[in-house]
Image (cartoon, rainbow, N blue to C red; front, side, top):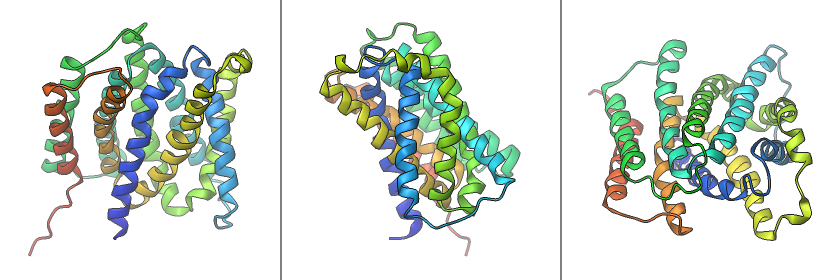
Length: 297
């Protein structure tokens, strides 16, 4: 299997892990852990895992000027991204949050055009529009159970800020992934990210009543730390090294579909013709955007 094919597999698996995060993290917040407190716990736990695995990576020295890029990746990819997402998720529904994340490829496409001088190809534009139409169908006609949404307008706005922040992260981290091994820089990105989120979530984390959290919720917290954070970042880093930022970002389109499947499996939603049509559109959009152009003969 080629590196490009492996990168597609990695991006797909990351999308699967992250899609489960919408429903699973929503169950934990705010009943047992407040959003910002959960972020501190998430970044700390995943950061420890990254530092542990880094001992098996190459011994590389990061150039002083590159710490600025790593700090930028920490702010946009860990700090702003996670804080706004978890706070927004606690206020809106899992499916709505996942659908809003489909704006990431649009943001990345604009940023790539401005800063990476990536050319806009007709096939990519069509794919993005088709995928976005499928996502819009889900949010407009298949919103499902909204009883847990306490302030969906604010929540959706925060999730959109999270999407824009993640788009900036994908652009910022591109050159770093090509220069250093993931184990070399990601541990520093999470360390700096932890220092960024700690002031926001320390008070909430200190109020957590550990003895009141049941085992099932600890398992959900573990899923968020190990799979939805550590696993997705490692998989996405590999994908970003081999694929264009816009291609990686398009896998966000799969998340509304996967988030719906998780919600249905947990008994929080139902399957109907609207979601089936939306799923077809989403996968069609992903196919068109990730399709490699044929070489001219």
